[in-house]
Amino acid sequence: MATFFSTFLLAETQDNINDVRKAAELFVSQQIEKPARGELHIEAAALDSRIRLTTCPTPLETNIPGKQSLSGNVTVLVSCPADGWQVYVPVSTKLLLPRVVASRPLARGMTLANSDLTVQMVEVRLQRGVTFDNPTQIIGSKVKRAVQLGDAVMGSDICLVCRNDAVNIKAGNGGLSIITKGSALSDGSLGEQIRVQNSKSRRIVDAIVTDVGEVTVNY
Image (tube, rainbow, N blue to C red):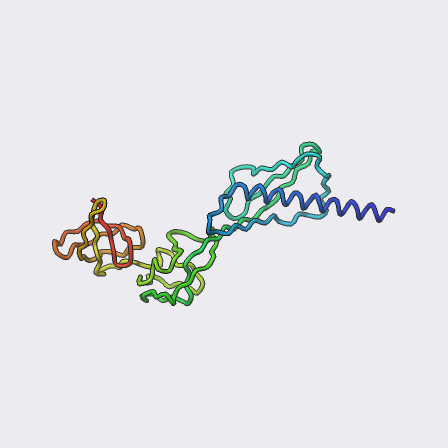
């Protein structure tokens, strides 16, 4: 009989621990908005099986104490005010998004081709700076610094427009645009502002890199 009740209590305690972990995971998932094309992985850490928790007669309460970032690891406080207990639950979060990565080692100076790139799910927390989700965005650009196999290609790794490159300068306002030839005076990645020189007028202007070999000046 003693063995029966001991086993029963252990099973009940484990069920309560599982409920606490699920409550923590659910709470964190409700705080993070998952992008349409992303994957969100949330997992509460295993808790000490020696913890003895009563079955809470009311819904468990959850909150994130202090000022914590929801990227990476976060600690959730799960409590049962009715029975006077609370547990801190570590929860890991991983938000993955499709990103262009190197399908082989990329050496400095090489021009990117479609065969050099592929798309994989990459954890957002590990990304810093400009990233890309479609290889067509950077095909034809040049590698500024080596990229290892499987690493995401960052904006700082490449130049869509490199110094001294011949570029198309698009200038316009609204629906009217004029295209002229020019020369880049510095390296630039997508969305960066660089200085370019108009080949005809020799005028130097600030322009935004909008594509491989292309910059745009808005008036």
